[in-house]
Length: 516
Picture 1 (cartoon, one colour):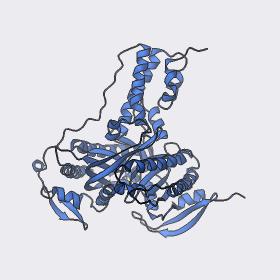
Picture 2 (tube, rainbow, N blue to C red):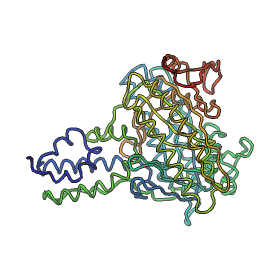
Picture 3 (spheres, rainbow, N blue to C red):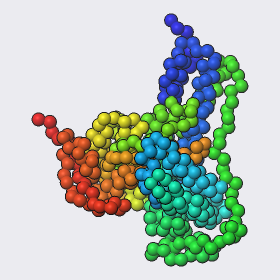
Picture 4 (tube, rainbow, N blue to C red):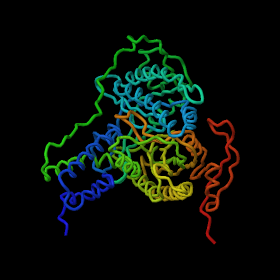
């Protein structure tokens, strides 16, 4: 019989956090060198996960599976990048080399923007494709809206560097829209010990998104509420009704220095100073206690990718053709503002149950529930099939998952809780598309970043979702052709979509065909 390893006591905790070869090497009675290698790997993984999660997740230090809510006040900034699809298409013809060039251009852009956000006292909460959600939290010391507007102006000035990008297909222009709104929002940590999510809920989150969508490229757009808080600090011109565009006629001196010393994102090195096996084991367990809460916010396939690539600290960019699903989950997220004192946790627990069941439907079919994000109504759930793990039938897997998700949401509606003396009507809208995308780690190479899928295929899936009616699943012709033998689909005709030169043939996914 092999002597028991000191690591066997935490084997179940290490199983998902070690590369395959390292996991195999720790069995039997591993040398202290192997245990030190385990510690070194976990220390690197800790830094990676810290960079992959927002600061709120890092400082909350919740136990995986804990559901928590908190009302917070501050200013929200949404950004949207125009021109990325052309930039991606211009580089795609060069294959892997084009992917590297595109990533270099994106890295330069995101590093510049994230640096400005950080130095302006903002927190990058999430990437959604090439868009950003930033929060400037309200403090007693300074005006969060003022900080946000100054950051927005600095970001727009920095965009001049990306106005003309040389590509194999000619010059591409990148432009950015920025929307800013001040208010309150409910943060909720939901999910299970293996899969958590940090979400922002409430009308003010939707208003912030509306402010961005009502803005203009190369400008900073403010909602009426944000405008009233800084009306004496800047000059403005009217934008769309109810919105105000900042006039940037400021000198560098009048724009001022950065208001805040940025909050550092780097973690302590946690260097190992012993070769005693028991002490190394204690150090490993300490690392696990900090890693596991952050790891629970990363989808399992993405976590596996990070674990296996930790030594290189690099995930190669690529141009795959996955299937993308957007689910707009409507009913519960809107209940946040009418929740009576103390009802927020009831809302979060029900949202948590829905999220967990939807995630199970996706993971069991080999997909990735990437994130729950904002929408003008409800919350968007972004799902991938085909990245990072590709299958020969990803469209079929997505179709099966979509029908399962719809059934989950119908069942949840039947058991919907009363929030603020109102029983919400809970339903979904689902869109599915497949095609070429760009997949990479986007953000700062050694700072805040995420594994992400970008491109017109993703944007189109979101627009198909927006076209869907209550509990309807709308799919592209490419998806319909891949699933038509097994699934009943009905033509919706040709439909004009934003960003498309010509109408697209769309279909409704009805149900799985009965086997005879």
